[in-house]
Length: 329
Image 1: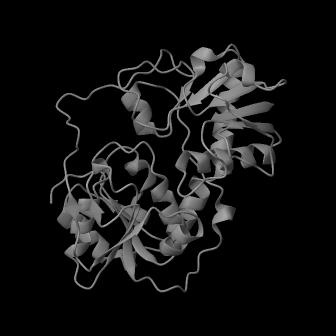
Image 2: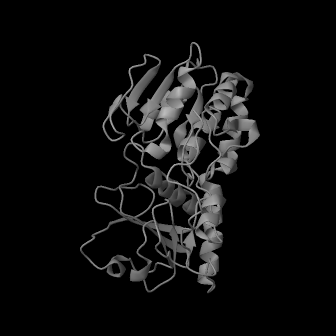
């Protein structure tokens, strides 16, 4: 079948580029599985394995769809502007009270449940582009990977976990030492290094020498590419049991708790985890090929006249749940 992948971002990914990285791997995997792929993406995009059309937000969306497309895979919600088969992937928690399209696909079981949906496909990555981890490399720090300016990511909690560990350091990938977005946060501890918003080879070098990912998020993480990227490089994950994390972090590859002291004790035993097991789990479970196979099953259902959810999904509010989920310092 001929699939049009739409996202108003630039491919290949610039810096971190989470969704961009996912749709890049999806396109490659679909081609390997015998399908035809075309991208409709943001200005500046290029691709050496599939045709690229540049999205123009000033023009009607349906007029920009090339001839011969069997199904449009949306990664931004423009379903109302379509008159042909589609699926839409919801990558965030940002829909609020809005109804999502009937053919919405979520990216974790937990996210599906919270929206009252019925269909999900775990994200996957094109692991061959990440290279082979150097298992002999010295591991000399822990890392946090995410936008540290988002309070729900809880970089403060990650700092507290490692600051209480004698002789250990934390590298924050995705933030700066001085942050006004969090009500003026200035971290002076020499045990904490801020590497800024890193991507590409620079990010991979940091991951390859980490003892583990400290990821104490305080929201329902929809998926968490930071988790599977860290696991790929043999870094076990120490995080909170929220959102998709229980699906991604099995006991073999990490530990989950909303207690700072419990995460600290688990991280102190990081060397007890098999780095090869972490790597194999990520590579086998969250590959672009496995993701593409899941999406193809959804495409076939839609082309056969089915809908992917019994009713338009809507984010459900959980009684008594605040903006920030519990964290015990």
